[in-house]
Image (cartoon, rainbow, N blue to C red):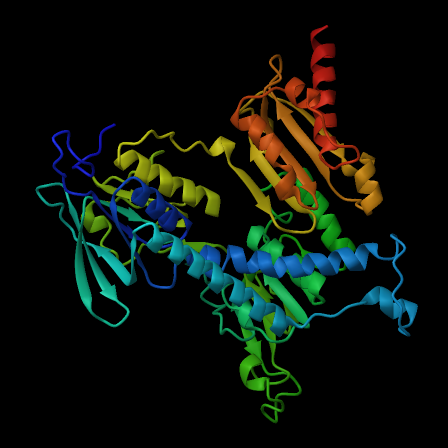
Length: 516
């Protein structure tokens, strides 16, 4: 096994110099890379300005899914308690019980969200330091030139204003991304919010307008509706989740509308502004007015066609911008896309020798799991360990709505566009006995397999906990298993996973009949 520029003891017992790795950005791509590099004997420094875990842990994935966990409890109780025979033993009139049998203390929920996120960040920091890595609080910038020995220099401006120059044999850029903003819809952190600011709310928005129907917008819209807000979802496209499986998106949009959400399709937001409400003329009239803004304040969302909708709060979920500006990247030879994302190959290399990149700043797939894999691959590659290039067709992903939408491998869009020839079977969960017992009405299992061989190339699961159910299909895709192999494996009866085996059996039957 070879290690570029040293990093291991030589055969005569002398120690070559330890390979120096500098990682700029402590998100999943950065901290996972640090753990791998330290394990392989490198000297590792992680430069991060906010806290290890990055946006994924502090303001995005961990906080949002913690909030959604509370929303899931509300949804399950509200939608199933009567059907399952649960009695609410109090004096509340039946109609009011059905409308809302439990309430939410959003301030308490958000304090728990932030506490768990911070604890996770501390755990990650402890793991990196325990492995031998150094963590620096600050911002890193690449020096323009590569040294004659192939090393790179990174200038770190610490949070206290001091500067330090680090010499590295390899640099990994893992700086993530931040919320995109519309010029005429600037967040104020009180009534007009981006997804990093919602956790500062102490009270549940009475009428929440969510602008953007991608994954982030759909997740927050569903969560706040379950928590008790009246939600309007503004979508510039024909349907919610335009990038997801169309059958899955149709199920979710139907669920949203059935639960009372106002879904406005083909409606593009042009501007959002805060306006004084009827109760705000006298100024703040409660202790919480300073945090939430003036009592009675509202927001107006102006659509591109001139329509105006109003609410108490507006959440902007219109994409993200990579954190690649003012880092000296292009001067150092790192090529960027027009969007500002860093161009990388399948082993995370950039166009600059000795410089790698991972995570949302690359624009590959905005998933923590992909960022982590990119970071690990970068270190395996540079330090001479065995490496498998990134294969996006084995990536599993999940939308944490209710029901959840999990996907892996080739999609319905790939099949429809002729990118791959595949057989498809979709089985509604309504036919599943466990789903009937649990009162689950919405969802399905869909599997794609190659004709002739029956090799599984993709799948979609729409159900509660789809993020857990997608794993056997992911294993099949990653290992080129056939529908016959899935069909022959025992499943528990009754179980939701039984639908996966049933779909596999149907695909086997159709293949056999087609070849007869």
